[in-house]
Length: 500
Image (cartoon, rainbow, N blue to C red; front, side, top):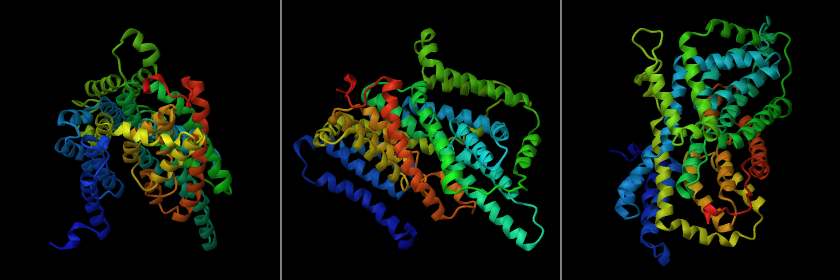
């Protein structure tokens, strides 16, 4: 077997670096308060962080390391470690994804997208906003990648119509320029809207559910569906509008074409779907029941069913889909063949992140980190908030946002406690910023998908994304500064009783 069989030299080095860092930390002399379980957790975390960041092996496989290493090093017994992989937030995300798969199965997502674009769009700027709004609405409930993949063929068909109709060679050259001029902001807008829409609900992107799970495990506090949306919806809506204005008015403005036939293309696509089918209506009803239950649980359903939970609601919706018959003989609205498309890797990654959080807390490593951070208490709160948001934003340009959140959220919670500030402020800033990496194709799957169309050059994505990253950091920090006291009634500069 040749050396090359193991991959590139970089991959070989990063593969070796993980266990080497683990051994170094295990063998080095540490302060008494870090010996034992805390030292083991730190060593395991360093190994996992290196493999997560470099993707030396697939991220889900790396996420299984706590089950092996925590018990062997004495950091945490196997029962407590394995319990993290069955956390209720994992089942919430799983339930939400199965409901999304049912929406895709019956092509309902395409109808929603086309109808939204048709209602909003008339001229070029409005059509781009229509695409962004449709993507934003869908990515609240369907994975950002799946939403982008759905929107892409529709967007490309529309982009090709921009300026079409030329007869001479020069006309055709101009048509291609016009198509590219329209396709560039359109594709970027879809990628941006997918990421922004994902931050709106707990199931929109895994980092949101990870935040809720870590808060529950560390502080026994609940951030439910309605509570999260109360803070995330105004922020995401503002970011959507800002990103649209930024794209079509500032960074890549479009010259209108009198011969633009893109709107007709959308009308034809919508017409080809025909009227709503009975099965689509059934899926809409199940989805509506689930979504309304999620949103109203904390202030309505709990009065009648005290034990009700967002995860229970999600799984109830899933069971309904598997029970309700479809118009096809012998078939139901959902089947296991479709459900097998679940992102099992993300669910395992969830478990690995939660296992690390449990290890931090139970080993005493959390308390030690908190103590070392007390020397930051003279730094202004707003500066710390900006620093956290910027660090996470640009870090996730080159790393997995879920893996980054898994490592940082417990640490940020402890940092907040050490500084005497509310942990929600830093944790939410990091969670939102992890979904706002707009600069590189590798930053998010939506970025990679739209980059593959050929409408965008790397320098164009970097140019647009860099400034939008900066804008998103400012929006997130200022929004949290004003909205946390206004909506959640908490002072972000004050440590709450539950964290003391």
